Figure: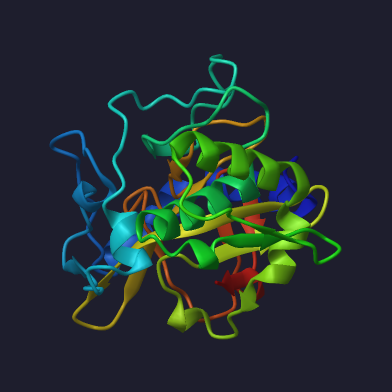
Length: 259
């Protein structure tokens, strides 16, 4: 899952000019913020001045994602216990299992989050993923935690970005983005990230958080914003059809999908 060509060409230029872009953003009235304490969950990550988190129903996927715990150790580890080479992409690390096999990569992390939510809701019949040929891999009902992990490993072995892109539904209007949505580029290489939380200001301006795993299999991590350091880790919802630059991949608005 190497960085795609567009990212390789454009992102270094953006990073070199990041300070200038941030300064321009601040001149427009967007204020940077600082962290006063280590957040213990996604919900505790502070929002920029003037923004408030959007309210969602208590049993919704959006609320569940917001409640996900964060590790005290901000470093990303691989499935084998080694540190990831690039430790500059993440803002924080989710306190969720990785496993001891090189399986839970980008699409797998997205599938884990969705499956774990439905599993906790006891909505077992809704837990399924399809491979490239359309074959369905369904959760075998109310299994214990070990059985659930074994089921996920089977899914990871046969499903990936290409199949997940087919399974998800296209979102044609970026302005309607919501937690649980996925930016995805199927294929080899391919990549995907999940929207974890959202906030809005009085002018209707929206921002969101992104999470990913990567290759090799590693901790699920909340991503920094490499373009706007003043608002990082928050990303702004832009409706001008501009690219979404993440630390290790570039997406387009047309690559947004929904369950």
